[in-house]
Amino acid sequence: MTNEPPTQRVEVRFIGPPPAAGQVARASGVSEVEVDGSLLRCVVCGSFQPFLEALHGYEVIGLSAVPAHPGAEGHREPWRSEELGLEGGGG
Image (cartoon, rainbow, N blue to C red; front, side, top):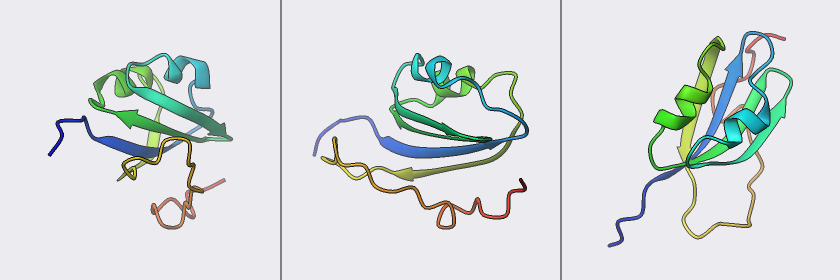
């Protein structure tokens, strides 16, 4: 068994615009940041603390995280909001 930190695919919905993708991407352990309207998607490896600090000051109304598939670097799975419970979040 390896001691690799957990990697999560994260989707966050905000009231209003989310933080800039570059601001979130600078947080330690955060990669693959995408912004689509009030929705931000990214991958978080290890601790969520730097990621959460990057969201400081922005009002979050939905947050989902699912394990990323190990060894899937370079393979991007489509985001499926309906599976992450974010459908009907207003808009």
